[in-house]
Image 1 (spheres, one colour):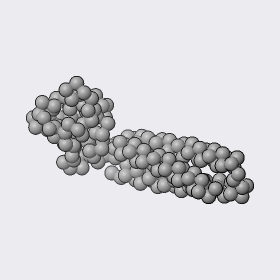
Image 2 (cartoon, rainbow, N blue to C red; image 1 turned 30 degrees about the vertical axis):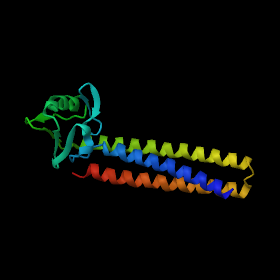
Image 3 (cartoon, rainbow, N blue to C red; image 1 turned 180 degrees about the vertical axis):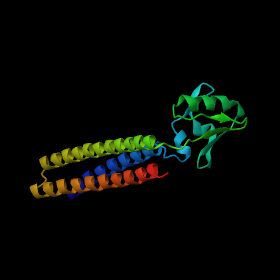
Image 4 (cartoon, rainbow, N blue to C red; image 1 turned 45 degrees about the vertical axis):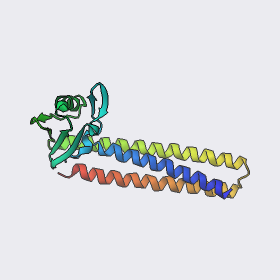
Length: 187
């Protein structure tokens, strides 16, 4: 029975790790005023009729804290890349210098920073909902083990351990949120 309990805990931890990873990816999309190649992660370019992620048709780098450069591997893709960045609705106005695309990242206003913090909090809350769903699944697995002969004491201990794991992951995402808030609000 102990082996089955450990499998329930491992499953819960694995699911929660995936939820944390998803949160981290979502938070990289929330820009903090500093230029980052991750800001263009969602851009998809029409590459000869095939939708292709921008990173697969160009090098995306930062020139400085306020400028992103997109160096296409084929010059013929310049216009298509610019069109895709505009269509991605990221609020950027890309400019071409004939060789590459330059994107100037405007400084954030106080109001915009507060909106970004709200978005980060919303994503964090979605993670917490994911944790609660994962906890429910783990408790359901525990109940099925009880039907297979798990003792009452082991059931109570298992419920406590599941709650401890959930609490630890909740603290982890709250720490991630605090760091992201600080990053967003720092001018």
